[in-house]
Structure formats: C-alpha cells, structure tokens
Length: 497
Image 1: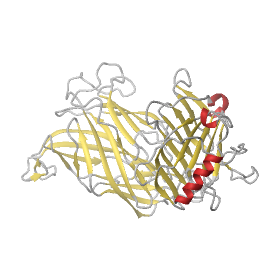
Image 2: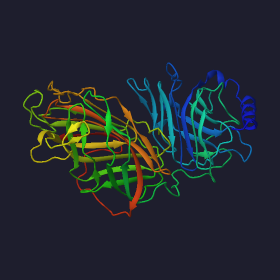
Image 3: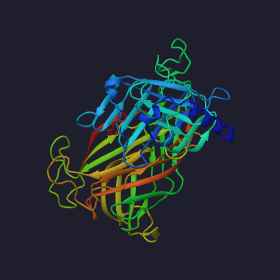
Image 4: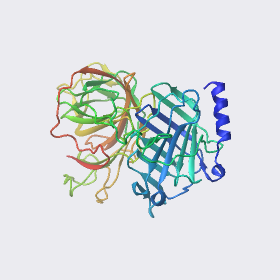
C-alpha cells in the first residue's frame, strides 16, 4: 500500500469510530483473509494467546457480518457488504449448547464459526467485491446487529496478492479499535452492498458466471519431493512418477464443485518403493474405480480423520479374527470422517480444494533378485523366488486439507491394534490447495493397515507434491461401486477383510 493510501486509511479509521464501540468489542487478530471478486470472501482468526471471549448468543439475537474496504478513494474502494445471519440458522456447540461456541450454516455465508480458539467465516452467496482493495479490509461480526457486542478484525497484515482477481492477506495484528467508515447498514437482503436497495441488490444464490476449471480429464502427477512415513520410522523420500487420472464433470453452481471418477484400470499408478528401515519392497496397485471432488473456487471442508480397529467380529463388519495376537490376520475396520465443520483454509498459492478416494492392493516382499533397489536388495519388481512378507487391501484417501489416522477399540472387545502402529498414528499433516493458474497441488493421505508380517498392524502418512494437466476430453466415466465415503461431511464404516 502507498504511504498516501495508508495515511487516508488511518484518518478514516480515526474519524469514524462509533462512540463506545471499541470499549465493548473483542479486537481479534487475523490469520488469513481471501476475497475473490464475485466468488468468495473468507477469513480466519485465531488468538495469539489465551482464548476469545464468547460475547453474545447468536441463537437468540442473530448476528451480522460486515466486510468492507476501509479506503473508498479512489474508485469507491473494493466494496462494502453486510451479511444477515438470522438466529434460526445458528446452533450452540457443546453441552450445554453455547458452552463451546456457536456455528452458523445458511444463506449468504456458507459457514460462520465462533469458538474460543477460532473465529471463521466463508461467504459464497453474493460477493459483490471488486478487488483490489485500496486499504485494509475491515471485518465486524456483531451480535446482534448494531450493538457494541462485536468481534473486530482489520486486514492489514502481510499482503500476498491484491489485484483484479483476488486479495489475500495474512497475519494481521488486532486493530486498535473497530474499523468503520459509515454506520453499519440495516441488512435488507443477504449480501446487500452498502448503499444498494433491496430492489437492485444482487440476489442471493446468483449462479457464478464461470468456475476456475472446466470439464475434462485431468491427470495429477507426482513430479518430485514426496515423502512417506510408516510405523515409528523416520519419513523417507517417496519416488516420483505416481499419477491419478480424474474424469471431471462440469461444476455445480454457485459452489463450483466438480465430481470426479478415477477409472479402473489405469486411473491410479504408483511406483514400487523401498522401505529403508525394513529392507522390504512394496507395490500399491489399483483394484477398482475411485471417486473424488474438486471445489475449484474453494470453501469446502475436506479434512479426513480415520479410526482403525484390528478386529470387528460383530456388526457391521463381522470380520474373522482369532484374537489380538500380532500377525493373526490383516482384517481391519476403518471409520472414515470427512470434514470438521470448518471450511478449509488453503496453504500455498492455491484456492481450490480437492479430495480423492481409491481402492488398492498393497504387497510387501523381500526381494531375492540380484542388484539393489534404493536401500533394498533386488530389482524392485516382484518375481518368482521373492518372499512375500504381507499383502492386504486398503483404501487410500487423498486431500488438500488435513489428514490423520489412529487406532481405537471401536467395538469394545478390548482389542484395537496388534502391531507396531503407532496407535496414535503419525502427526497430523496438511496439504496445499490446487492452484488453478499454476496447476500445482500438494495432496496428503494418512491411514492404518492390518498386516500379517512384522511389524504387523501399522500407521502411515504421505505428502505428495503434484502438477495437474488437462489431458483429454470428458469421457463420462462412472463408478458403480465407489469406496464408502461421505464427501458432504460425516462418518462411514469400511470393512476390510
């Protein structure tokens, strides 16, 4: 920002603070803000220490969220929008409700979350901003509208992008007071810009004119720098060359969510690799079609959490199991949860979210062929005379958000894991969103696997940097029996005998 614009911002802020507002408001730091013209406005705030106060009850009073350019000259600024968040669309979190915060789901803003450790909002209905921003972006979350009970942030901070497509800022300190340039308008319609009547305002749920990617067949290729961690071993490099082909539909509007199918055969390929700590070679081969989603303008919730149980002799899996002795079988039950009720916040330069699930068969062997394959003996290919250590079916789940997996006694039979684990899984890992301009993405996956070979049941996590290319026309591929998963959010059970 130029010194002239900064001076104008400070003058405007100092001259227009409502009496008493700063004394009663909760002044919060900003972790990240992303605003795309006509597409999405989102921000995340986390306390630098301690927790945020819960300053109101939106289930009783409702709330308003105002986002605006604090400098309107030249050109009128990027915009000024107030979203009405009615009481009936809020719910209290915790027991009793409200003890752990509040969550909004409804029109205007896809989600607003108020918790002691985080305040977030993602708005995708009527986003009539025109970037770039002239000055800091003021954000006021008032409970209820027009009162001094409000959370206030001002971005500011580190400017990553500010052009005609997107404004992105990070790490904004708490403001000295609540920013405003004029009295907060009475919201006559969700997402109505300041100074615009309800008769001429952009209607809620207006379809977006276009989405960042088109229908077609896309190939995601790991080019370099991947890593894999199994059991309690240190992470080791994962070889380049793996790929996933996704036949991608046109987007639903206005959310820009594309459904994808990973065809079988040929949709998933992974290079054989060596586990240095064991001296074993491993192959991972696709066994059926897979499915996925791409939210090409961001805002979806694709966090993956998996809970594994080495035995589930009762419903729903009815898996054979001969006790909790390590190596007795490779059966597992896996409960897979997608989402944590918080829209993804993108790391890296991308803004699009993605998730993929594909069934595979994993084989581990002692390679008795001549030669060396990394830190393993042999030629890296399974041949007659090689000794199989273990093999099992599993389902791999890749995401651009966070991924984690652990072991637990789901069915209460006092047996949750029989092997090296670790039971708590690997540390949580996070991907990087799809950059629809540079066409790069970093995906992550985490899971557990049952094994009849030493060190038996285990946990893994992997991080894979990829390039993305449109490699063909949409083929209309379908998947009659996709792996069990709920992309919309929720938990499903997988039974892997």
